[in-house]
Image 1: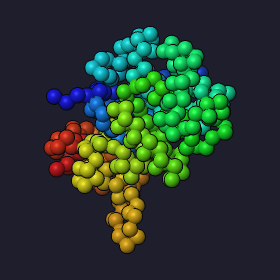
Image 2: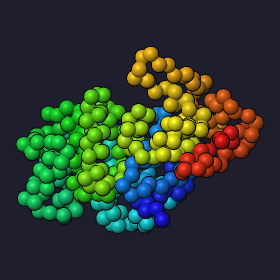
Image 3: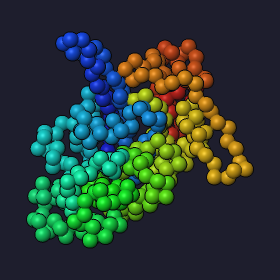
Length: 322
């Protein structure tokens, strides 16, 4: 039997659209619209898709930074959505997040030591002297010299700030971390350093990750399995080797065709999707991808495609999947 650290079941996250003098709810933005998946203990699940598809909202909803509209999140077998505020506070020791922007995610008025050690003091895990030692150990683990402990965020580069963000998430010794596009704001050379750091930490600490990104080459490197999102739904999920070798959903095929090849003498046939991404406030009926899909037919307009098991834990939501 598989050991799953996280199970998400039919998660929905809707945001109200308000209008009129009385600001009544006139509609809903369906940012995440019925997402189901599992994360095995010790693995990395990559979540990819275009900007605006709901990736970051999914991560924040799992963490209950947003109060989810409906659905269920089971973390280590327990319903994360039913915890009281006090229970949630205790459970978050095991579950952390690394944010996308290393500039805005750090308080400019706090030193590195205060940023990393704040949660240790807040949860009464250690006293002030013990906190300082723990912070230095965590900084060393993340490639930050301990003499940086009294410096402020504005004194660091983007890559160093993201290391501070990772150190902050590690300070409480979590078992699961959501990485919300942690390298998208960094230079390519720095991206590789941060990705390698996350891989090393995973091996050393036996961590499980959800790695959210729009960069398919980065996701291929760090992930064990990959889930492809489109307009609030997962349309395909598979082991990375299977997904990159045999993409089955037309949207996945289009995304993979955009990855540049390192060999200039080789060319890949580019699939250009027509039209714009529909609004999550008014998504298409049936298959949400049908307005941009070259294979769309009348059935796609009327019926929501079910997830089809292609074997080897490869699932795809498409009427034409084989």
